[in-house]
Structure formats: C-alpha cells, structure tokens
Image 1: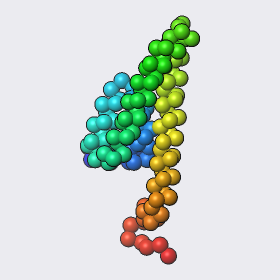
Image 2: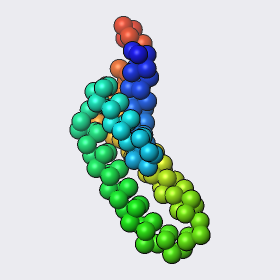
Image 3: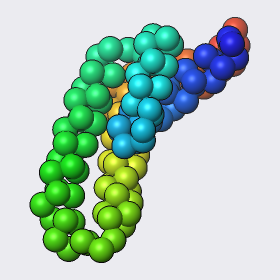
Image 4: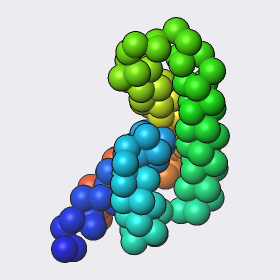
Amino acid sequence: MRRTIEWAQAGLDRRGASLILIARYIPVGRVAVNLTAGATRYPPRRFVPLALVAAAAWAAYSVGIGLIAGTWLREQPLLGAAIGAGIAIVLGIAIDRVIALRQRSLSPEAERTRTEPAGIPAS
C-alpha cells in the first residue's frame, strides 16, 4: 500500500496538471485523482486552481460538444469526445511545463537540491 501511495504521489508531482485535467474526462477518474491528491497531501494551492481549470475546461467542452459537435459530428459522437480529450491532454501538458519552468526560475536552489544525491553537497 505504501509503495502504491508513493507511486501515485510521484505521478502527481511529475505531471499533476495533466492528471487532474485528463481525469475530468474519464469516468471515475476525477474521483480517483481527487482521492489520491488528498491521500498524498498534494498541495492545495496547486490542486485548487488546477481543479478549477479542469472543471471550467470540462464545462466548456460539454457546452461546445452540444453546440458545435452536435451539428458538425451528428453521425460521429466518438470523434467529438476524442477531440475534447485531446484538448485536455494538450492543455494539461502545457500547464505542467509552465509550472515546471516557473518553479525552476523562482527557485534555483530548490532545483539543485532535488537533483543532488542526499547527503552529497555540490562541488
């Protein structure tokens, strides 16, 4: 159980934005990611804005599918769903990269600490 929690935490640390955004589109995915974020103590100041973006993106997707894809893809509803999921994936990856760049630029000492082996100072 401990290894599973550590694995989940590492996944959220590496690609939290992608997971939170993509999970919104997967049945039961939203619940699983939310529970994992809580169990691993994912920082609320990161989770809440991502969850808000995910909710807004999902709502916009739903409305967009109803308005646009409903007329354009009347005979191909799965294509409309795939397009929405693809947008969520791209948005999640983009947000993850922005967060990573921001963290590196704001905290060069923290970045160096994460890449150095424990107990061995940089020379």
